[in-house]
Image (cartoon, rainbow, N blue to C red; front, side, top):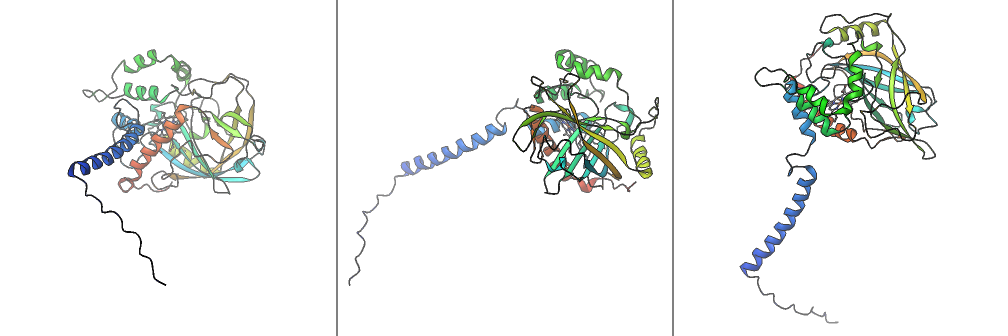
Length: 360
Ligand code: HEM
């Protein structure tokens, strides 16, 4: 048998230099369109558009750069313990944390400032962040504040608020009058300002209530979705009239002392929204009288210094949620998630510059 040769291909006419240039320009054009798309989505082409680093740059501008520390809520302390479920939230959510048993927790108490040396009495707000690690490996991370509402409802307004708090280059202090002007232009701050009127710096992290503020959805085995806001209330209280000392650093010593004497406990409450309650506006409270489900007890057993403790390398991103809990349409959630990641990238690349603290 004789092999048949394939038919000869017609000889190709070489491209003229002009055609080569045209083809290269075409390829370049496609690449430029793709890159332009990326830059557009990233906001690089729009100098006015907010990006994760816009918040972090503003926080650094206002508070200074403190290598290795969180760019907001910089002064804090790690804590370790567990959550004991009551089982009462199981009908609302498939998340394992609400089933029977215990879920280990790594938490962090902090002050809401980017300055890790801020005196404890400088602000009436304290914060509490938690990471629950379920047996199936899924995590629920949340950051809560002691106020019941956020001053504003959008990332843009929060950025403007940071700008209003920027220091005057001449004095290094906030520009007098800038914050009142901001509040006057933002009537949604009314509920927060009402709270501030009576809020006092508390004498202990242990006797505070903390609120998740943003709305989330719980999803049950039937796929039903219930909008909720959550928070924790302390099971221990000081005698009435306990006041904060003048000392700049009393909160950490107080917490270490209390934990050395025994575990500290909070009740985890889920407030259930009714039709019409806003889920996309953290500056609005929900009407009183909403049903509250006691999901269980948070028990803290040990405190650790934040520079060496387990919470140091945790990014308390509010959108890290297990199945059975979902984010809402609140625009602050995505902005928080992105800004915390940006802060995390900066601070974790500087960890070797942190002063090493001995464990309490
Ligand atoms: C657009 C709005 C917000 C921005 C840009 C923002 C920004 C930040 C940043 C950069 C951090 C440091 C994150 C890290 O390095 O781990 C932080 C921490 C924190 N934020 Fe926000 N935040 C916002 C809104 C809120 C809201 C609504 C809450 C409500 C509870 C909140 C609660 C907290 C808490 C508790 C922490 C401390 C977490 C920890 O201890 O590690 N933030 N925030």
